[in-house]
Length: 565
Image (cartoon, rainbow, N blue to C red; front, side):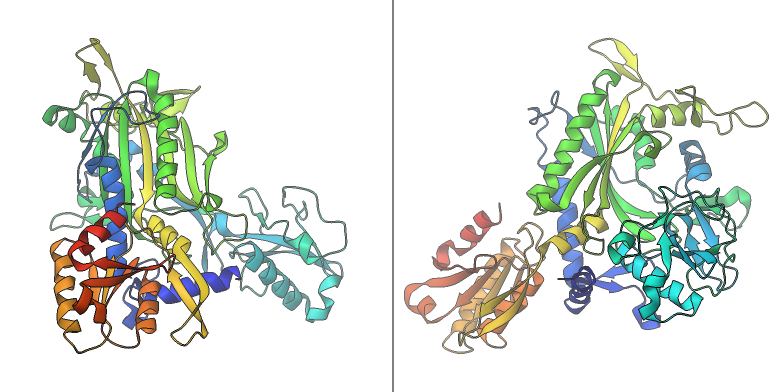
């Protein structure tokens, strides 16, 4: 299945079956914002619950988990979306939380600078750099079409254009120019990004008719700004949080003082965050409003590298446990130049989303070793690196640029009698991205025989039973002989057991099965003539299509056991 075709089908299914809708759709929608429908809200809630259960509810605080240096406590918090503005200045977000953007003076379009890539195109003594903001294979096709149009050529003249990614016209490219005859295979070798050291005079911006229309790159702060109180002034300026992490750092002492936790311990939180992305894209993958599942793990500096390894492995295993194939998930350690200003080390869990080219991966979750940057910053003032060491950043006047709280955020171990500033390991997952990954992974198409033995296309979401929005579907085979009444009793038994269930008595049984397959329901239960005579029902498995008879008296317990998987 083509990449675009597969993703288009997933998006269409998400809308048709009530998983995800475009926000404000009846007014044309609002880019970067999404609404979850009746099934989507259940799927996302199940993803949150699976994460929270792993982190908090089912966590064993007495016995050390496999791979952990020792046992540890896990607790949860819920912090406010709007915090004191100084939080964001001390954390570095106020100064550093920005993307570079460029505008096209001709089309008035705006682009994230790191998303603008392209290739050189030469023909008849003219040479331009054709730019696109599309992904690789789609971008290659776009570049080809734009080059043909610019040079006034028809498609059959494509081979006459010399394409390359080398250094031309003042632009310093990675790698040599192409000298071999142009072929599509050569083109797919890469679209090269523009750097802020490049001359833009030869760059043909996406959709522009002439080169040289891009502005110089400039910083664009990603935080949404608002005001608190009655007056809109600089004194009342505040920000919607761009991450949930800082709420846990500033509450470090509160958690220690109010709970019986000792280092090492973790503080977990699920909540909304907001980033004013320049170019939201790829369905819910990059949005302006999103939900995070973050945990800050406070540990002794001498054990922090071991804990970093532990949390990388544990988070990878969580996705595999809940249905992500190992073939589609990688754990990628960041190179030194990729690390954030605070990071000692970071590893990304990346998933092969179907909107990406084959062999490409998108970030699903980051596991960062933040050292003592956060607690020290909120105590002393904004920190920066000088000669490899973290020191308080000074302003032009030689004084601390942004003062911390002045509170002592160190930790005293009453057993070892040691005082230290804990290091932090942070697994930070996007709930929306995780939900999208599980939805993409579950999407399957196959063929199954209908009631007459004719092969029919079947679309099925093979969601892990814990994540499926509906666990059980109840089908009375016919609308008479007391079958609907018996089906209603079984339906209510599942309701009382707290198991998400749907009742459906409309249409042929095969159509009802296919409807439930499409929304990922793992088990369908059919009430038929044998239910009245033998007291059994048919239980159909979504993935294996196996059908077995189960006594009505054992039915709820049978499904509960299945759902534990």
